[in-house]
Length: 326
Image (cartoon, rainbow, N blue to C red; front, side, top):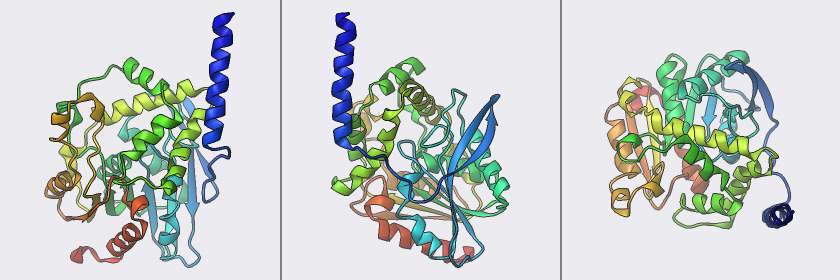
């Protein structure tokens, strides 16, 4: 009885603390639609925003979010693209955001195929593709699998520019799961603070968007999916296949970005040897047929949030240019 009362007391404290962080749910900037998929015998729903421009230019752009985010955090990029006439498709990948979070085997191939099926359902045969962080890994995999669909590829601080298995110790899925179960609003915020050289109050909304998952009654299922997708990034490098990317590619990376999957699992000395995004992006670009790198000074892991105007301007300039003048 004492244990039950104690747990209830802790739950009440957590609820008060959590509600004080924010009381209103984060609202996506555009209407959310759902696409039905069958994965490993399970019916799942993939949430997405389909934002059409007032004056279409006939081109479509697909935006892939990172692991600790969802489609919401593209809110300041979407209007810049639609104002140029682009139709913008913004999915929450299966396992994230407002999409179903099934207990299945996650792979970049599966996620890429989900997006291909979504585009097919919308009648879209050619896209410009933009991916950030984990979404950059997914964007590279999509472009390798469906090169005929991707006219240009923009990679914003993509993960996977090095093989994490070579220097990050293997983590049993049970350990990853237990760690994810410990997540709190404070822990999410602390991690997101590492993405910026200087934290600003306006970044708080993106912590709130990630922390929406903490409100779910079955948060354990979310934690399990978070563990599975951490394992996916760890086990499925794409860096060895970047030479297959034949379309024009632009890297936009923050000069200060030192993000490493499992950074806390290695020593400070080892951390200094990895995660240098300007160097990694330059090396990856060197393996590609037609790629260049933009390095943004004093910028961290998320240029499209920290320096939105510069990111949007760079992206639009890249999209406008003909391939020969990349």
